[in-house]
Length: 164
Length: 454
Image 1: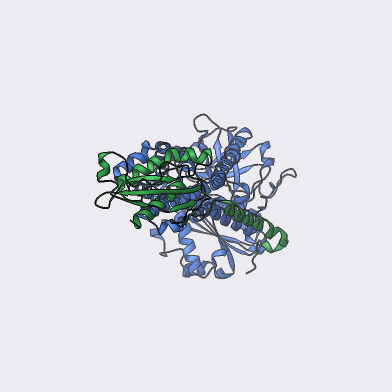
Image 2: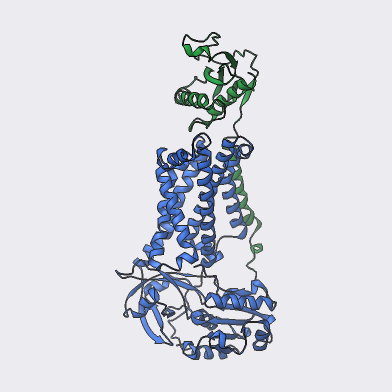
């Protein structure tokens, strides 16, 4: 039976290929520009890399503060890894109680070089602190709007718990 | 009327050919999928699946959210009735895909809601998660209402449910989908992990939504407005057969239409009580500058209204739509199977085919009274070396159990395998005929019909 194909073949090669190639290239370029998977680097915790700005709160204070709670909390401390991520470095320290459970977390380092990081960390770090202390582990929901910071925080804390 | 057209009367311009090539369509769909679903991949979605419970549920929630939005957006795009796409695939195919994508979107949305609740309840109770996701969390109240609307639309579009409601009710509920998309949008860019921290992905998402909205307003709503501003009007109205009217529409706006035999139009009477009712009807004669002719059977609702309108009533016309035109029949020998008002497009095609087609027309009807245009059919058939054969009577009372079984078909049409086939009529006839033809060895590509989409 004769078939009348509405063939694309009758169109020149350029017409056939150009739109598809342009669209595909555009799509690939777009995906390349999109943020990649979160790259976190766990820096060697024993090294003191001087390139990191660290105007954070406390440095390690082994004896803790004067509250009576510290009698049990702070019985042991474990320093977390310095975790470098897109916006800088986060490092936390885990305080454990007599049973070896997490009871308090202190932030040793966080990115504060620019206003945006400061703003994000100002609202995210307290939320993370409360979440991990309640959960007594490092696996909590990331703070919306501070996903990368949250993951770095959790990674640092996890390292501390693993090595406690 | 058939052969003595006065010189000024001529065929309408034939429908334009689509500028889209197959490769264009494939590229557009592939790249769109890649761009939308790819952000999930690039943000580490796969790794998250292998991570903690929280990561896993979050990843599934993001993926299903993206997928639900994507299928929904493509579904909306199809309903715009883009001319380029319509010329390539036909409105029937587009609406069938719209339905499939709508159902897919609803399922993806349910998965998205479920995984969202699961991820938010990893550290809290399920009840707390539900309260967060239905309003405690900003933007989620709107998203919840939006999701509810989408699910209602999907539910009411299931055939079993839709059958039980009037067309009006179903139609206005379906419009809720616009509200559904609009309400849910903000939560996607504020809470959606793939967008709230990635400006490039977020801008892509916003641009896509704005672009679609603009296309919708200009392409779909603009088309409606244009059809109402330049309507045709009823020039003739005749009764025929049983509860059937033959309506002819004419007017200066005809010049702007492009169409051919075998196509259908959406007709919207421009009247206060039914201006929003627009329904598809096949043309029962080849469209000419004399007018468009429709043979409409009263099935209650809008079809009944059309039959009662006075001459001169304005009718907004959208279309003609459809890919079942003389061009696709390619000059081969023809078998045309018609049932009920399906005889309309068959009769119009008959006007436009040549003697080399030697058409055999099988006209199926429940009773003699239901046959329409029989004289016209015979006249047109004889003109091109064809013949008309009617199969009359309720199916249960026919001499043969299945009038479309291979054996019966071959008896009526001995050279069946050499013929190209056009089928038009109610769904039951379409399926019965299709089944019988395929069983007789006719290639699927050689069987032409409009797929019903409701």
